[in-house]
Image (cartoon, rainbow, N blue to C red; front, side, top):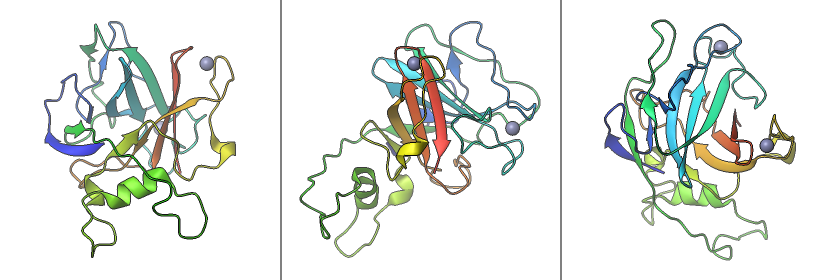
Length: 209
Ligand SMILES: [Zn+2]
Ligand SMILES: [Zn+2]
């Protein structure tokens, strides 16, 4: 997923920031600290929408890095019938800017970067290779806002979340990066965000690592 400039705050397109879209009657999620979560991202998910919220009221105190914490929430909504949600008046609820996301398909040849016989990390290769010129080490990595599908980058198996409803291991859906600049950035504590879903139960989960 690549940064694609500013977007309207309530557009039904892949984006970070702006106002969440949800089915009628949706209640803005609240963290265990008592504050509202901040809306991070509206992501495509095979005919559905993933809506990601993370608490930013007490950065460092609310444990958004843990999948089981109340400091993050991921919803899997149907694509149709979504409406802009009324924003709570108090608390850290919205990002300063709305950023459109475009997707760019990357196919990794596992033979290509295999220096030491270690299987390459597909996301890491894709991210570091974005617009990289032959003399660059990293390319334009800040433009990369994450990825959809594939497998979670360098995540220990024991951190894979289980569905709170059916207790099966959840399916990996997306990586989220902090973003381009202080203006557009989501605060992930300098880490990578991971979004998981259980499609059968319409549950979602978020953690960082
Ligand atoms: Zn909190
Ligand atoms: Zn489930």
